[in-house]
Image (cartoon, rainbow, N blue to C red; front, top):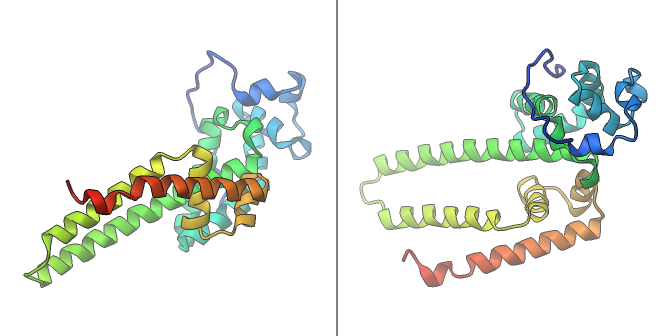
Length: 221
């Protein structure tokens, strides 16, 4: 597994300080060169100031965990490595997206990896489903157009229900149900207490159920 790509150019707004910059205790710490001794927040400050060695240290600390999560979701090691590279390229290009007040750097990177991996699985699944559906339609003259439309409408409703959730609820549900992780694993990945994660998942599922409960009543009106 290769390291993060370096020498990348990026554009970033400097109109206001990022959460990482606001969290910096002093200007001097941002110039720290002994990156292996720096904490994660200082590493991200260094990344925001174009220190490639800070990015390399962040990758050394967390790249293995990011790759392992992507590999678990995707299975394919090559695609998992692509996802890992993408996560750290985003950290290099948009370090201001990390907010230390919301959790650890590792949790942030794992959430990014899981989100990208799930999106890739959805894309691949949609493509395979489309191919299977087209093959079935070719082989069977008497397919039900109504059933096909219903399945498409149902998928769209589930997607819409997920989008109504709070960000924290959606992250926890995606990790638990798309990623197949236990409550304890999700709590560790998000840097949150297990009880909090359970409550968010339950609340999110209740919210989704409220959105989805009217499907049978509404039909395809």
